[in-house]
Image (tube, rainbow, N blue to C red; front, side, top):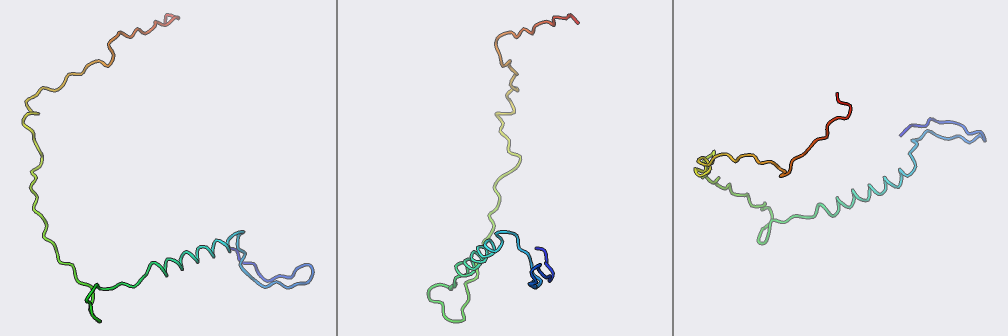
Length: 106
């Protein structure tokens, strides 16, 4: 946003210094302000500690859970896979492909 200094119009009207907003900026700023206000009003509702909580009581602290022990042993091996031979490659087409010979004979 550029700052416009104080100046005098050709008809003698004195214009004070001001910011020059791009077209549509006032409407967009108003819409953004309404969205922010809506988030602040509706997004920060009151929280309660639950039923039976008296004044001055906070939320219950979560209890630490024990970590489960790992039962996997890596790398995982399958004995049946180690005894099989690797698969042989097979052609993808079953017919011969004939490439035409060049006409110029080079």
